[in-house]
Image (cartoon, rainbow, N blue to C red; front, side):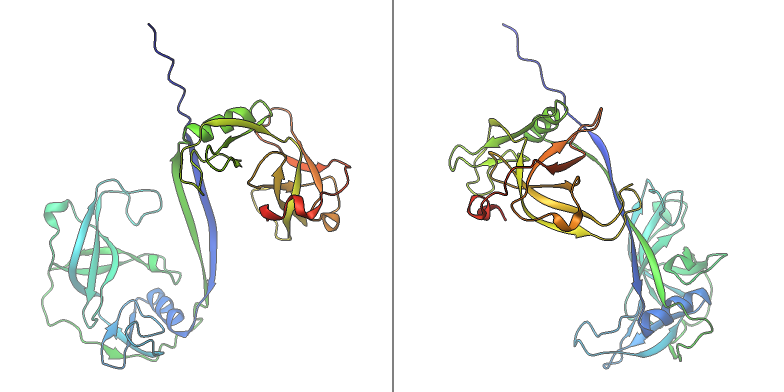
Length: 320
């Protein structure tokens, strides 16, 4: 007796990234501009605590706080964790410690990297100081890292600061990135393999009999596993849509264009896809569409009108 072959486990690297742009209020502007000038600023609360990094509202009382103070560039490690394998864009390229440092004059701790030869050289309570970046632009990376400090003298007390600097930083762009390896399960593997054959396959719930596309391996309503595969489409109905007016850097598609939720014939869950082959301002709910495949494509490039009469609202209203 021979056993059935084990299906191939699909794996693929996946990267999700975007630039996050935000404007700065007076407190954050002063903090980041201060870092550029090798000055660390905190903010004083109504009960006398000094918060570093500063915030604009007291986390305990929600009162607005604007009283800036300067704290020291030396401090004490309150807790730490060793990073054996630094990742892309982390502060140091060699193993280091993530540390929470309570700077002299502050009542809260700042998270950053500590350059140390190994975990045996790090301890809670050790004294450290800021190593400033050679080139500073008004960002948290102006602190290159912390380093051990054996200097003598009393810790610096906080002192009032106006927060005024020449050419203050008023906004930042922070890149957000998540990269990981994605491994679809049994249901989505079958869905992906069918797409390679220009077919769309979902799975039917044995209890409620709804067909889910893309399949999830279990019914989100009944909570039972799904196994019965059902081919749906290829045609479908636009249930709702949006007009995209901002061009994405990684998509060679001219704006405006339309992204829509499409209920494929035989499916009980709408999927989303781009609509083309029709002026963007003529796309509508109920529009009947069909997939357009490019040569070698692993999924439909877009959907276009079929020329059929629009679907009656009652036939898709439950899928909006």
